Image 1 (cartoon, rainbow, N blue to C red):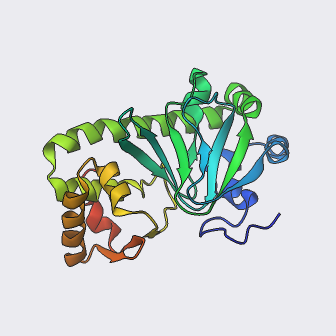
Image 2 (cartoon, rainbow, N blue to C red; image 1 turned 90 degrees about the vertical axis):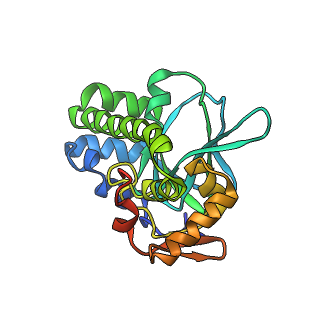
Amino acid sequence: MSHPERALGFATLENLLVDSPWFSNLADDVQLRVRAEMWEQPVRAGVALLRRGESPNHWYGVISGLLKWSTTTADGLSITFGGMSPGSWFGEGTLWRGLPRPADVIALQPSVVAVMPGDTFHWLCETQMVFAHFLIQQLTERMYWFMEGWGAYRMLDVEGQVRRALAGLFHPWLYPHGPRHLAVSQEEIASLAGVSRPRCNRALKQLEELGLVKLEYGGLTVLDLEGLRLSVGA
């Protein structure tokens, strides 16, 4: 199946798997089973891959595009928890808990995701130590990122919070292949940073003046990732 709208990322499911450390260390027969039981799923921009309240049945990896993990409060406020870019894997927590999903996963760009059935996921957890170790490391990285986020919200100024939100989309473990061009609105960035849109707009202009980002219609391009990470714990 071809996907003419595919955004930058891995060309195929096979490319994503080969690049993933948990897969490359599996025995050949295990790799064959994983390949046979997974598939690609395209998601149009603005469309939900997963909805809050759904039962978890699969594990996911991002082949191309960009998705967000978010929820909407009872009074209509949208809260964005993070983004998923090419190379990232997600959904293990809900599969392990076996409870309805706490948030939506929505494509911000035309995206393609890799889908692993829950039965395959649980079989790997029970039989493949390298897979279990990968998941433990991933959950640890995610936990520390959110814990540090609480401290950052209290210690950093608005510019620092926006810096951290952007740098978080390039976390070396969780989102190892984030595209430097982000097709996200300033409202999304403000939600991710936990600040108001006007304050986010001013902070982004300051970052542009520092040469860290370039603001563009419909998004921005990160020019200096290390500069964004500086002093924000990213």
